[in-house]
Structures are given as structure tokens and as C-alpha cells.
Length: 419
Ligand code: SF4
Image 1 (tube, rainbow, N blue to C red):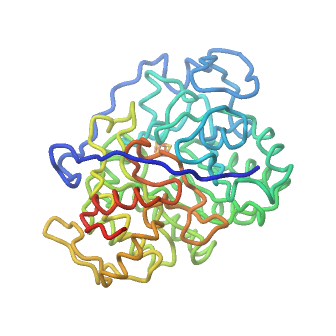
Image 2 (image 1 turned 180 degrees about the horizontal axis):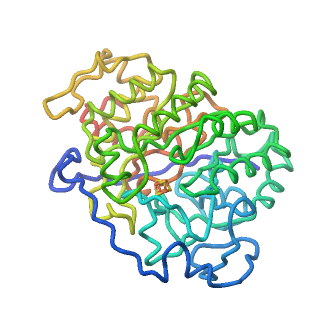
């Protein structure tokens, strides 16, 4: 299987109400509503006895209560297209380099994170297998079918990495081990390395160790919120969700110990109310620990408790993207950068010509995540349009072309010097 990247175009965007960043007081999630008893905990789905049959496309509405991990997993639309189990085209790229898998259960994720399409409160109006997550549908597929396809020729697979996303569920750890084992039994993890996107809330150090022993290469923690206050508001008691900032850090530090330098990291969503200074300090802290940050631009996911809020203005996002890249991969320290009184980046701590060259390379503006086979600072996990529509790209799932870079420079408010 091959994969070709194509040119793309994008259109301008502005922050809402003329804002060039999303401040804390604006980014307040809605309060979750009470779920009717007959929809709680997947009851409505579990009341059926329909066996699952092959690929389940979201909105099939067949209510298959036995469609659950470890036998079944959900996978991103991009991965399903790349695998050839779903038709369709992706704007600007023909495939994804990362096979993103998601554990699945009729009762779904038991957490209630405010920005997330998989959150528990959605059981009131949408079955788990039909929920959108990072802007796209996630078809459910037997894990054995996925392994059968990839195991035919792992060395020449378009996938440079596989990732298992755990959710908050009592079976999450055991099923992650089983799915991982099913993969590494047939596919050499040196040919296609595996990342774990963990759910620290229910995990112990032994669980982290077990993922390593079973062949995982990188362990990440979806911290998502950049400060303890934001974490609590969007993923903790602010939205009746079980997560705790301290537990996420505990598990990340266990992962640092077990997986070692450059093999652990954290996901961070930019634009949920933190300042640029706060998020870049977190990026620096992760680098100082020996890890990496994987950034997402906040997008108001339909059906989530934050779907009424503005997406991150592109200038805030571009400043953070560029500064994060400099800290993560170019040895620049946050202490060398300058910030205004609202915490916005005003200086990147490198000479203008060097900064210009780095912008022109375009890598800083690509999707960030675990590396693939091209080079360390190019993520396998390209998540096409997971944080923006193709008309206003936040994270580029392909190398930005000249016209993209021209637009990026405008968004950064740095003069255009491209010919
Ligand atoms: S734990 Fe993860 S999957 Fe579950 S609601 Fe929170 S962000 Fe979504």
C-alpha cells in the first residue's frame, strides 16, 4: 500500500468577537444534564441481543450490545479509509500514517470531559458507537480483521505507528493488554511500533509496566488541560467527571521511569482558557523531564459540553505551535521567549533569520504526536482534520506548501518573505 500527499488550500479565519486568544472566563463549559434512567450506562443498547456483524459504520443504529473490546475496536475514519475497509477521500492526503484504535463498549466512556464527543453525558441522546470524536466518526471493526490486513505486509504498510486509546471503563486495562498482545503476536513492533494513549484514572504502575512488557514503544497521557484549574473545570468535578490532575501526573512519571526519555509524553489542548505562557511552561516542563508534548487546537466538538464555545483563534494557535516546536525540537527555552501582559508570545528567543527558516520548513505547523519513519519531529499521528475543518487547517496532516506557509505567516503576524 502506498501513500501520496497532495497540495491543499485553506481559507482565512478570525477569532470570535475579534479576540486573538481564548481567555479563561469565556471558556466555561455547559453543566451536564441528567441522563434519563432508560439510557443510563448503555441500558438502551444492552436491552437488545443483536450480534455484531463485521464492520459497524456509525449511525447504523443496530444497537449491538456485544460489539465490545477486546473483540471489537473503533478506528478513525482516516485509518478505516487507509485500511480499505471504508470508502472516501481525505482532503489533501490519501492516507494516515497512524492506525488509531479506540476501545469500545456499549456503555462507553464513563468520564464526562467537557470538550469530548465520547463523554458520558451524551448517552442521553446518542449511542456510544455513533458518537463523533475529534470531529470524525469512528467505525467499529473486529480487531482480528485489522490484524489480518496489516499482518500481510507490515514492512510496506502505510502505517508508521499503531496507537491504542484507552477510555475510562472498568475493562480498559485488561482489554488494552489483549488488543496489544493480539497485535504484537502477528506484527513485529519494530516494523510498526505501538503507542498507548492511556487512561491514568484507573491505572497502576504495574499496568504501565505491562504495556511496556507486551511491546508498547511510547506511553502518553491525555492531560488535555494545561493547568490544574482548567483540568478540574473540564475533566474533574466541574463536570461530574472522575479525573484528577495529580493522578495523571503520577502515571506520567511512572511512564517516564518505565519507558525512558523520549518515550513518554502528554496531549495538551490549546485554547481552552489557559494563557500561552502557561501552556508553553508546561511544554518546557515536559521537555525538562525528557518527554514530549502533543498539541491539539481546541475545536468545539458537536454534542460536547463546550460546543457553544469558540475554536482557538488561529493566531493564538500558530504562536503556540511555533513556540512549542522550538522548545520541543530546537533547544530553545521558554525563559528565552518574551510574553505580553496577557501571556501572549511576543518573542521566540531565536534570531529572525533562523525563525524565518524554521517557519519555511513548515514542520512546526504539522500535526504533532508520536514519531513515524520519516524523522523524529514528524508525527506518524497526523489525525487529518481532527482539530479543524479542511477550509481552515489548524494542524496540517501534510507538509504545508508555499501558499499554506504564506497564510501561516499572516496568522502569526510575521511578514511574508516567501518569493
Ligand atoms: S476520558 Fe477520554 S474518552 Fe472519556 S470523556 Fe474524557 S477525553 Fe473523552
